[in-house]
Amino acid sequence: MTTGNQTSGELTLRVNGTAHHLRLDYRTTVLDALREHLGLTGTKKGCDHGQCGACTVLADGRRVNSCLLLAAAAQGTEITTIEGLATPDGLHPLQAAFIARDALQCGYCTPGQICSAAAMLGEAAAGWPSGASASLTPETPGPGPARLDAAEIRERMSGNLCRCGAYVNILAAILDVAREEGAR
Amino acid sequence: MRPFGYLTAPDPAAAAALVAGRPGAAFLAGGTNLVDLMKLGVAVPDLLVDVTGLLPGSIERAAGGGLRIGAGVRNSDLAADPRVRAEYPLLARAVLAGASGQLRNVATVGGNLLQRTRCPYFQDVTKPCNKRAPGSGCPARSGEHRNLAILGGSPHCAATHPSDMAVALAALDAVVHVHGPAGPRAVPLSGLYRLPGGEPDRETTLDRGDLITAVEIPALAYAGNSAYRKVRDRASYAFGVVSVAAALDVDGGVVRQSRLALGAVAPLPWRARAAERLLAGRPATAEWFGRAADAELAAADPLPGSAFKVTLARNVMVRVLSELAGGEPAGDDLAGGAS
Image 1 (spheres, rainbow over the protein chains, first blue to last red):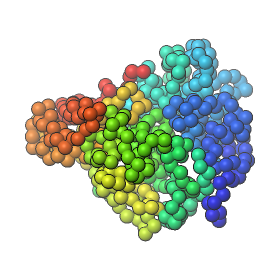
Image 2: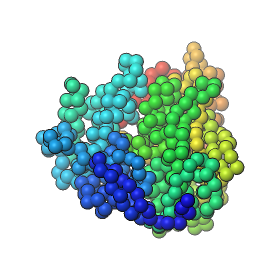
Image 3: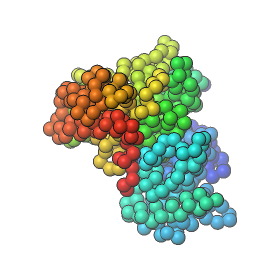
């Protein structure tokens, strides 16, 4: 039994399907582990305080702020970063839509926007309500997808800031993918 | 950030013993507030005891018809739960009004109750703050205090409790289950928090090593007619300026019972019992809702810059109660929409 006096330790982080064995200072966040230890610089450090969403990654499929998640506490979690969203067959639909809609200016917030949107579409498909949902209960009994309109997407994406102000095209890109998925 | 050790524990008793036995130790759950405070230098634990693996992470039907919510339940799962949405809409709405999708996916119910104030002086270690550094003073009184407390503050501290979820839980008479070094016990939410008085650094009645394991909400038949309304400086992802959690039981135009709690106006989630008492048996009209709000706010003692919150709190109370009296769903038109 360890005494808790060590300030660093061996740990395993699973990222984009690969297990990485690292020795890290316990202060290391998932964000810093990705960028400084694993060379995965697609995930961006914006505010480093959970306020801007630039560092958004998926943890077991759920969007999280990687700047507030300690690497030690993320052991056993499957992390997916922007580098893990595309497949050999091509870009993730959201990546393609962001390009098609010119949904960025400097691009710094874009990996976080896309990771966040990918998980957000899953949340809506699972029927999760948002603060913009007129009703908390689905129109038909049982679980069903939440309908996504512009107001819903703005509310659900409010944890991702874009200082260039590319919101209009970010919204359009996400709406495109939401409609494609809804039509399937 | 200061270096620290990191441990997991097999069960609540072991976790409680670890933290109770080491003055610099702290529990780590979702960490969305604690890790931020450590980066700011406000929290300086020398050991984190990670409790995410041992806290109950499910929501169960409680004896008596209420719900027992594991302290490890993530905020997003609480808001998405079909029973919470149908039976306690004020609670689902309150959770959805807080933070962002990313933060709600990680933040836990137990941690949400114990999150710290966002008073700018508390978060800035270069400034005096009686809550962070007892006896150092409170620059907020003559400085930035627009969004600080109008109820329950003291000359030593006017910080507000930042939680939305806790406001709904206060209205619902929630009970907090705690596992301490001496074993498990139950604490009513109304007895969990302390007003600042001369000791603003002591925020709760919990002792070192006390771990919140669950929150129980009793059945409340009329909670189906409830709402949470949060007024803030932007449409989403901001702490409240005033919030109101309300449930109303109206029969033939007369209020039988009500539950009313205010957020962002006091050092703790503020149960508006004076308003509830006045409303019982009164006509369910805007006039009486205003009288009830006035009764509650008679004790308000704002600072010059926060005086507007007294009027705002009155107006939001009247509006939410009026909407609930009319049977209209409340809280939606301000819940989002603008970018």
